[in-house]
Image (cartoon, rainbow, N blue to C red; front, side, top):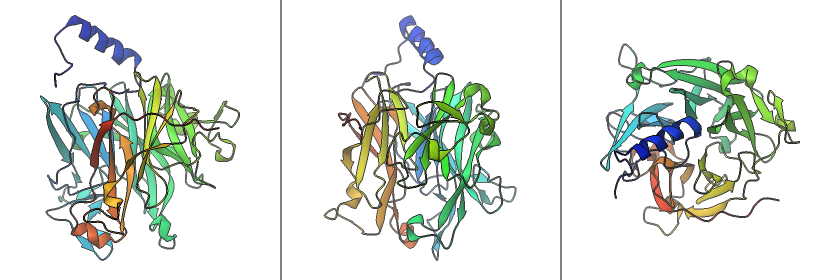
Length: 378
């Protein structure tokens, strides 16, 4: 496959125009189509979930990983896997060759640490989606804590708000990046901006699961000029279609009826549509869904089933009824024309199994023809 980078003034001019006017990182922003992402166990990294990708301005990609297994082998003590709560990876694509370098922080005594450090007692962060703006990163951080008396569906944890990480010094290795932590939504609101993050125009938009009722997806935004104080400058899309200060889930417009805590929303200029990709919110569902909309505020399609996850098919080799899959999201920077590239992660209801079943608990990559959009919601 011929690369799109050519030493021509026409391409240079087009790239310059793109960098100025398309801050929302649409599909095919960099020539990585010949690379197939993969996530080998290396550098002490032994599997993780989440797997959001954020194109950096120098052509690399930042990968955000959730609960990450580490060490020389997968280890589970009782029901507790040996892991840190978040890590990152930097991938490159050169002449069709994919490479990823993982970063797991360590302290002065070489103990493993979360890459993004919790700012509150007895909690941790799940780092989720983020964006580049003015050569700096803004990444959403979901605050999580143990909840031993939670229902089995909650898997023993509960969400305790959302913060925003501001990352600078990206020319250095990730372990030396400068990170500041800014509060966004406090504990108790039960609507936590983090599911997917994009910049369009003068605002950073964050899709947000409202944890009430049917857990719909609502939408918040922050003016990019106000990112240094995101909580003060936060706005939500009201039911009447206006933007209001703060976040009041009871008054917010539902942009997707059934929300998910992890998904991707990315703009495709060739289709003139936004595309959302996620795994169906129904627990143990094998369905990956695709939605489209002409704008971030909708109307969004109901969700077309574009893929059935092989690991969850009862007639597949190695099927395990304890396996569940989630964390579906698109990575358009690796797509050729008329293609869709996305990842998902499978896990087990019995943590002990991930120590032995090395075919699960890392991002699985799917490359397919771009599907047709579905039916617009009423």
